[in-house]
Amino acid sequence: MLAPDGEPVGSFNASTECDLEAIGAHKGIIFNMLKGAASRTGTNGDRDIHSVSITTENAKLAMVALKDGYYIVIALKKEGSFGRVFFEAKKAVREIEREMG
Image (cartoon, rainbow, N blue to C red; front, side, top):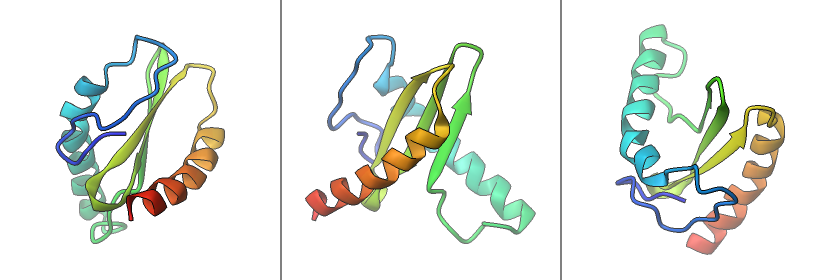
């Protein structure tokens, strides 16, 4: 889980290969680029981006927004399923936001 400024708030890493601080540093760039692209198409410019999926040659990354600018990051192996991740993330978001108050 990362704070609005990109700093890690809490984490569980099954692997040491995920650099949350680097992801956090680029989160704003990624979300702002997507918001700009959405506003240019007129399809989603006035709404927040709720989730982002990124696929590379070796891995997948999912970023899911929480309230107050927080978000969770899920790193997957390239064989991982985004469908399953976003299904589970939706449940996790409800629980995390309830705990956040």
